[in-house]
Image (cartoon, rainbow, N blue to C red; front, side, top):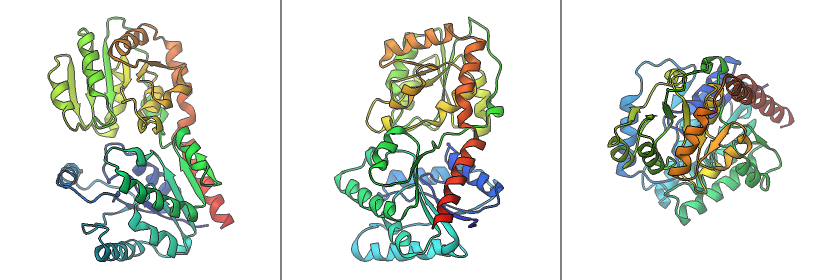
Amino acid sequence: MTREILFYSDFPFGYHNPDAEERMARFVARSYRVHYVEQLGIRNPRPRHVLRVLRALSSRPEGAAVPFDVASPKLVPPRRAPLIGRLNRAWLTRQLLGLVEDPAQTVFWLRYPTPELVPLVERQPWRVVVYEATDDHEQSPGMNDRLRRLFREAERRILARARVVFVSSAAMEARLAELHPNVIRAPAAAVDLDAFASPFLDDPNRRVAVYAGSIDFRFDSEIVAATAEHLPDWRFVIAGPIEGPARGRLGEIPNVRLAGRLPAADIPALLADASVCLMPYRQDVFNDTVFPVKLVEYMAAGKPIVSTPIAAVREFSDVVEVGADPDSFAQAIVAAAQGDSDAERERRIERARPFSWERRMDQLQHAVEAAARSA
């Protein structure tokens, strides 16, 4: 059975959400050899993208031990100009093939349909090609009609070679099931239940609302700011890398603390201190395709959860309160805190159990090895 994975991530290495790295580390623990390839995306780099990469590199822990090698290929801009595009495809193929011993015995696992990777997918006799759609990147901000066409064509050609397709959400399952016969819903969200276990905080005077995640285009900073102003007796802790004007708006509010990016190991302690955990996502097409890791982490911590009405929370209506605007969001926070109990905490933890890392890894490994046996 093949025991080598060439994993092309939708994240740069060291991204604040370490799901991809954790997953590949667990494959290594199951006797796989893994090569982690950092995200290349689809756009030509702009100055802000270069600055973001430089900031990420400067904040990456030095000497961090990982059980797999990390490849950081680069493409020359303008990356799809005719001559440069041919150079990029050949250069990328040479870089990635140099990582693996034998493509015919390797799982090529892609989380993003970068067009320059398509020839590598099509022209090598990979043992198994896996396509994993964690989000509907086609709907992400900055995707114009030309980029969407490139995305769709690259995805179509990768799907033609893929033997298994993993998706994180019902929306992605519905879309890709029309294009591929072997679509498996296996959310990227997974959790170490023991790490997040925390006692029930039986303190009616405690008023701490916590958000742990990126403060980016998915995050509704206005609903958080207005809610914090509605609830001046609550303390709002916003932990994660922050982009754009949200920093200025939220930083002006006395009862909001911007905690910045925290190591993944610190998140359980942050949630243990919360009265209520927040999922203030913007209500748009893109966010209706996501299945947030934080939802599973919040449930594993046993905490009351308040979210905007994105699609992912519909099947968790028994453990998630919903508010669509600042008034209803603030009301939901107060109601969630008042309705908390030890029994409710246990119910939330039970809802998180299907998302344990062991169950997720068993599901992924079984599907990949079944596809390899049938190849």
